[in-house]
Image 1 (tube, helix red, strand yellow):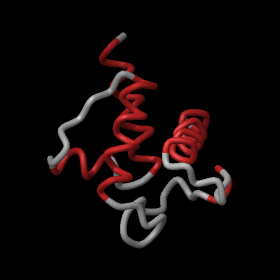
Image 2 (image 1 turned 60 degrees about the vertical axis):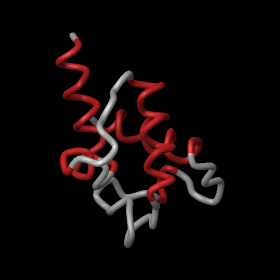
Image 3 (image 1 turned 180 degrees about the vertical axis):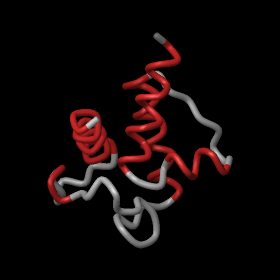
Length: 88
């Protein structure tokens, strides 16, 4: 799970062009939106597309479940990991 969290941090940084951040700057537990990293809805769309391209996961744009997956890096990693198990 640590390796997947690291991958998602790197994906987030490249997809959103956050050159001033390194993966080590991002706490896997910190919120991605509002407080925490301060991402917005456009960032969420871009990150969602990057996750879809990289891991083949898709999610509804405006569901409560999707908001829960986007709560933190850890939550995203758990979602991707569970999707991998279902696909296997």
